Length: 83
Image: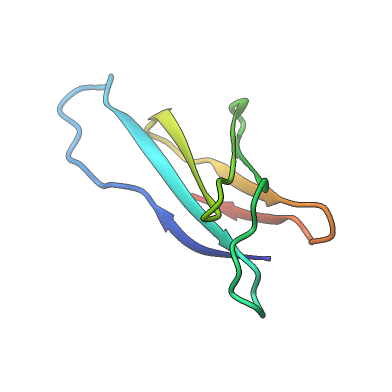
């Protein structure tokens, strides 16, 4: 499994209430095919999303900060990265 893109829009925060969206695209590393129904979780929050037919998942309303992004799917090793 390969997380081919993580899109986190950068904006200057004028308020502490500013929320962000995390967009992830998950594909097979060798075949480049989209992974459908992969689980994307943002820890330590309980926020999670499942990839769609294009392998994309979006987690919305994320507070600014550091998180561990975990992507998992049956038959693949989970991927964890700090964002």
